[in-house]
Length: 161
Image (cartoon, rainbow, N blue to C red; front, side, top):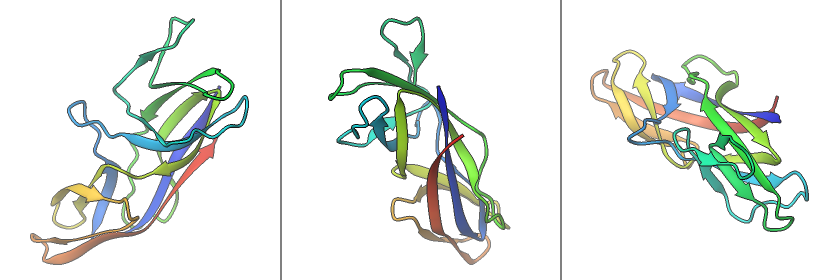
């Protein structure tokens, strides 16, 4: 078993508490590139995983968020994920752990930020629930505070524990 962490950092201007929108009604689909640890073959397409779905692991009594059979070596691998509850906040330039990944037989290489994120106006408390970070930046206007809001220099890292 290997633990990976999805970490993020960004420059937040007039907003704070940046998190993926992740509810049972609207689960965030975390998208990654993965590699089989047995044969080192990278999966040909990114895979998506969410924190609410569980799949049976064959030959086991357990379940996982993601179960995958390598097309090259035919080995079955799995991973379970859970959010850390951490958010990217204004005035913090450090990496923040967003997601914990318990991986068995698979390496998580790169995070692809497709999906909705949410943040809050730093002074106004205005909720922004449709933040698109697929271009690693986002710009909007906060009507309550009368200020521009933005998220720039977004960086993601998948790190082994």
